[in-house]
Image (cartoon, rainbow, N blue to C red; front, side):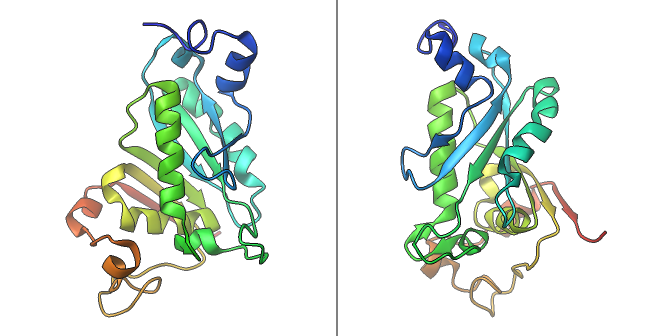
Length: 205
């Protein structure tokens, strides 16, 4: 197999930016959104690894911090770390919280993330059909709601200190409940699939 380091990424400069702690990239599907990764160096030689998505909080500054904090975990557990960046005010209105609720105007943040995952799947030639997700505070809300919408894409979820939660309540509309998921997202809630996802939730001091 041709490696990333010597084949399609033959240039040593590109290998520097694409392996280990990577550069920050704009999403090809929507350049308003960005991401960085930690990619175990062995991927450059064709190794197959798992994927953990780590989602920032409201301030966004944890975007790089999570990547760096999870790097050793990724290295020793054969796991790439993907950290998306959903900037404040992408619709020009200074809104901070749209990503937490998965939908803002015409933006579907779950689809933004899945497009980024597909982009890095192609880039690194990995099978990341399912991945783990971690988020804290605003990122915890994202992780919580992503798990409700796409449990089939997750092999684990860690939800830290979400400021608000969505109840699995079919009598209330999104985001308080899940009654209108088919109308809002084109998705039907799959309780059986969600029940198969190992979930850690951390709340409190």
